[in-house]
Image (cartoon, rainbow, N blue to C red; front, side, top):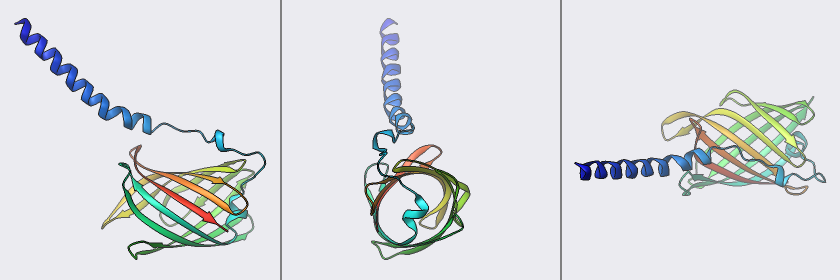
Length: 186
């Protein structure tokens, strides 16, 4: 009888260990990371000012397992009118697919922004500190024939006068399903 309980305890321990090792990476991966270590007081990032005019970008999409899914190039054209930026994005993916997105971004007060596109659910909220900015929003993306609702956690860092680096986590139910890295150049 004691052997049976010892075996059951060992099975319980093994199952608990497997569950913990599967769940723990998701919990730690969903924690809020800080951008304080990249903030520069010498270089300021004004989203409207940077994206006013022509900008070119290159990016990649990586799934949650680290597999490269797609690469793309984006041609952007921004126009400021009365504290609002109309930003037109023309994507071309490595498989030939093209996509057009239009954003209206408003500077609501110093260092804060709100944005809207046809795909956003609600309003994107942005906060700028020094040379960095974070913008969070919910949107709909297409995967094959299916549209799914996801959350974006966008982080921008202005590296110099002409270059901005963007890293976005894409989340579904709070779990990271992919990330996007984009390099913008003026």
